Amino acid sequence: DIQMTQSPSSLSASVGDGVTITCRASQSIRSYLNWYQQKPGKAPKLLIYAASTLQSGVPSRFSGSGSGTDFTLTISTLQPEDFATYYCQQSHSTPQTFGQGTKLEIK
Amino acid sequence: QVQLQESGPGLVTPSETLSLTCTVSGGSINSYYWSWIRRPPGKGLEWIGYIYYTGSTSYNPSLKSRVTISVDTSKNQFSLKLSSVTAADTAVYYCARDLLDRGLDFWGQGTLVTVSS
Image (cartoon, rainbow over all chains, first blue to last red; front, top):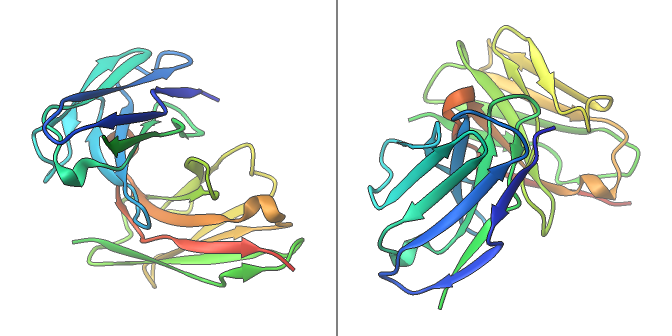
């Protein structure tokens, strides 16, 4: 299985800050990397697919980059609704695997 | 807008079989892959497997011996069966539309299944 490792596991920031979350794959997954946002009691929401393509309806303050084994999710100017847990997921090969999550909290 | 809704028992006895159904509305189940994912309490997301509308499947090897995913295109539904459950199978179970290289774009709200006697 391809292991996905996110860092940091948790992050505190203020509204208006910019933040970056990283995701590393245990082997090359080319650009088959997706990012999700999950809020308590809700289903995950697809933010970015294929490493850098913004899902329809997702604000442009979210962006993704990377290829191979190293990827980043950047939120340029945090809004109150962005405080949530973020997961990366590889869809290069089965079994699909997720990172352990990064909890973004309000400072 | 595609919507998915999980249904099934919220409590399952250890060693029995967990059975869930996902009903798709607002769109056809045809021409897509459909996945089951779970999130145990306090843990991250785990992909269980997917099914193509034709019935072909792929399962997570960690669960493969106990999992069956099936599809009923006439009802626009797909289902999950997980046999010989233990407390470790307690989780929120989600169904989702799987676009493979474009991610899981529509999800059900999730249903908590507790394994307990």
